[in-house]
Image (cartoon, rainbow, N blue to C red; front, side, top):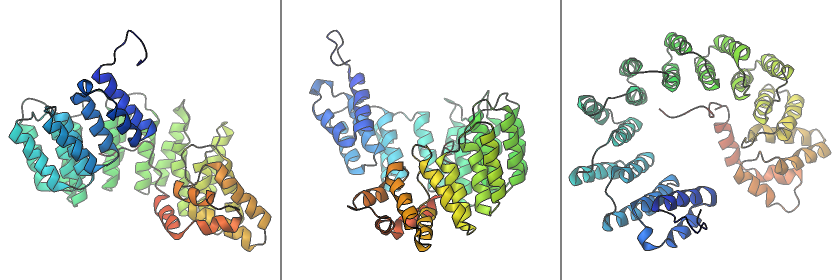
Amino acid sequence: MAHRWNLALSPGDIAVQLDLVSKVHGLEQAEKYFSNIPGPLKTFKVYGALLNCYASNKSLDKAESIMQKMREFGVLRKSLSYNVMLNLYSKMGKQENFNALIQEMEEKGISCYPSTLYVRLNAYAAVPDINGMEKLLSLMEANHLFTVDWHAYIIAANGYMKAGVTEKSLTMLKKSEQHINGWTGFAYEMLLTLYASLGDKDEVYRIWGLYKKLGKLYNRGYFRMISSLIKLDDLDGAENVLVEWESVNTSFDFDIPNLLINAYSRKGHLEKAEACISRAVERGQRPTAGTWDRLATGYYKDNQMAKAVETMKKAITAEQRGWKLNRVTLTACVKYLTENGETEAADEFCRLLPESGHLLRRSKNKVNSVKHKTCADIVNKIDGDDLQAEENAHGVTELKYQSSA
């Protein structure tokens, strides 16, 4: 676009390119690109794009600096940039800065669009600041310029839940349901998740029934329902929903059976986990690295180390972009091979690791820094912090379809 003789880039085009440079090449390259933009083209859109780059990278000092320049240059006229900073302050727990910016908006008469109100409501719920949340929600309900939707009450329910005020959280969920209009599957998915978090199995099943009446369900809906039932320790119910999904889905996604495979493995129901995998394989599906990794962890916890080693080998060689293997199980497998005198097998096991791409980046850097990568070198380079982080992180499988309330 930039080199087409008859196409002059607008400030909006440049803002988009700045954002893309940051996403693809990183913040430093985005800053270089910004510095080369001619002065007349550095409008509020371009400054706003740079501000968003800083906020996305949680570069608080740089974001505040560019915000101040926008004030000085007189390009800070709309609520969008304020929303970016409010979100950043909220995520970083800077409540005083958050409140000061709200006061600045009020003093300058910056229009408080619904988006700003929802940012504020999210911030109060995240703390949680119940008093601030209730006052703002009442203000929103009294404002006749826009209609409060189901999402506002979901946010409030989440805030009450964090504060341990269960009854009010349930009240907000009921209100949210009353404000659902049209085909809004995501609203029902959020209700499923929150009712499960509150331990209300009856409401989870009731909402699932309403959701199914909307018509065709997609993978995300089944994922949410199965994960909700697992959270409630209703594995029988989760199995029934999985069977239903298998009978109606046209787009197989191993993330869905992986939920139950993980639950089975954690509880020691390894035969059920194996059967779940076999059923998918019989249908022509290929298990992912995450599938085998979860099962290997189950074998390790059940002290079936020979099976854990063989299954972890499958995890290493399986394709799944972005999956990071359970470091606790991985290290246990290497130690098992080494202690049983299977040094060649252990070295072959470790040799596959840097090639597989399944290592955590920090550990992968350590492994690659070892000049002669023997099995012992690799195990020694994976330190206790990595193991603890991995132990804490694994078992949380509800990532792909999850979203914050």
